[in-house]
Amino acid sequence: MSQSLKMDLKKRKIIYLATQSEWGGAQEYIYNLAVNLDKSRFEVLILAGEGNGELFLELDKAGIRRQKLKSLKRDINPVFDVLALFELISVFKKEKPDVIHLNSSKVGFLGSLAGKLLGKQQLVIYTAHGWVFNEPLPFFTKYLYFLIEKISAGWKNIIITLSAKDEQIAKKHSFKSKVVTIANAINLPTLNFLNKEQARNYLKLNQNGLIVGTIANLYPTKGLGCLIEASKLLPNCTFTIIGEGPERPRLERMIKNHGLESRVILTGFIPQAHCYLKAFDCFVLPSVKEGMPYVILKAIAVGLPVVATRVGGLPEIVDNNFLVEPAQPKALAEKITEVLNKEVKQNHSLPSFNEFLGKTFGLYN
Image (cartoon, rainbow, N blue to C red; front, top):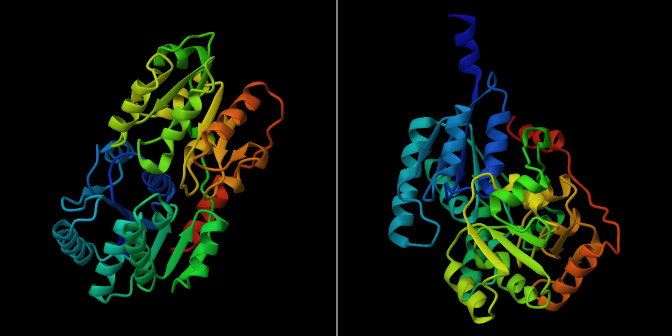
């Protein structure tokens, strides 16, 4: 037997899973782990469901194997969920992974159940990108998601939380799994950013105006309605929201009803949106629920003044002086004004990318 074949036989196979293939925090997390794995020690496969496939485009560029799960949808649907479960069981049987690393609540439940039904000894790891039962959902839906997390915790060996706060929540509810916190981090040297003039030209923004911006999928969790309400109190600023999602019709109605068409811009989806961060004079993340969002790490890394809400892992990286409570438009507007007037120096904290990789990869052995 050749030496190279012996090395291949010793490789541990890791399957990463996400519910959607559109680009977001969970997808960037998976990508960062997959491209930095030691290829002499690990073999990797990425599985994801519906979406625009931007994750797959980036994986293809990096030469990383991936597969779309045809039945896996974001919303709860008993028929598709059962089909997705059997699809996962089929893939796991064929691939025989040593490690199953799950991301997001939906695939976290289905993937860990598939692993349990197979009865194999694979290591099941789940990264909670912010607890979904903390989202602004109807009571029954919130409780359903809580039960999903609570029950499936017993089918997982390790739960990774992105913030100490989320770890405390898991332990408070006695989730039956080992729980560890590993903060998200960015590999800054690999990221490209346009300068202010270039970014504003691309986004067709006034070179001399005050621009307040955010990058977020248009979901209720992102609190973008609050940002639009805050914009009414700041008539000298233009607000730019980069992203796409199901909230667009509601946000467009708000903008029209408040007569803000000339001052609040919904750009839609833009690939590699972080490249345009320097177009903003202030970056705002008005979320009502978060884990540890990459976009705020990137905004801080390029020296952009930031304002964020006191949710999820944000208080662990954003200077407390620049946090406000969620769903408070007036407080948000006041804090943005303070930042634009440069009244207080910002002092934020960025986690180490190498530490993030080392701690995560250390769990795979």
